[in-house]
Length: 376
Image 1 (cartoon, helix red, strand yellow):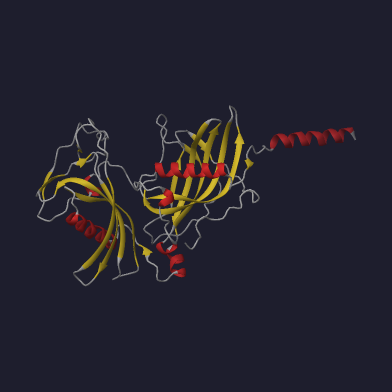
Image 2: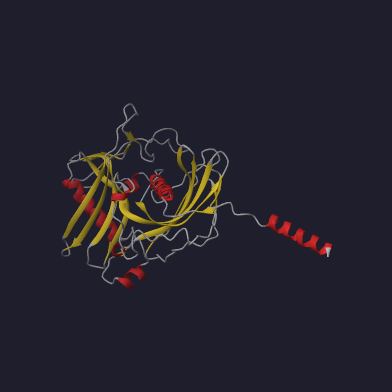
């Protein structure tokens, strides 16, 4: 009997040692502190994004925390996001940005974030990982046959609509310089012969209106314009253009050097490796009424890639190693015929390794509903 009791005690001790205790404790998702931390995380994500649109908090699905030394608390948040219509360069506050609706092919996703707080100090976003994707074309067509569908950004329809809109923009603009397309961010239509809605970011060039000569240098601090344009075919040769643009005026820094950068260099960037100094100025002859070479072609030799996810690499050790979660993304959609594909956004605030734990949500602490209805 004594031998049996000793065996039972030994098994209990071994089990308690072998099974790790989860240090996280579930907290209320609708508490003011958790809501503030989730908004802080979304704000950080939007600050880090270099292309596309601002995101808005939709619903907190899971909120847990663990206490650490020095009065530090690590908060784990799992929340849903929705895409807005505000470009990431826009100065409009997220709360004032219109949400991308279902009829406009909404984009949503799921984020996991770790936020550290310490008594008497503001919260700090340690890292986050998001997956976003648009509704599939089949899903949109099934629920709304009359809704426009997304088309590829490099399609003939999208490229043509953006170019004719930009040409018209340059004609009516009172800006001294001509603008060129930097990136097309979205395009949709209901089909052949119907209006094409295109959204694009344009950038100021060194090309002066009315002059036939134009350097292919890039301005270090160019003005930009984000335009939403509807191009409607009237007949075989005529189109109407309805366009709304938001300007992003560059801040000029005194004593920052020349106001142009050679082709192949991004703003304030060093010359590409292997090149000895600045690239020579190239002068091209423009026919009267012609538009400058698109920025995408002019600076393909080394400018910032607006199509790549925004990351925060470690400045000493290179790109951080992020440990993937075993949880399958919740809304992975088929978007083969879409101009927007699934996007993974990862940042670890300079840390080399970060683990986003897979913690089951507590239904009692997280009964939150979506802020934006699914059909909105």
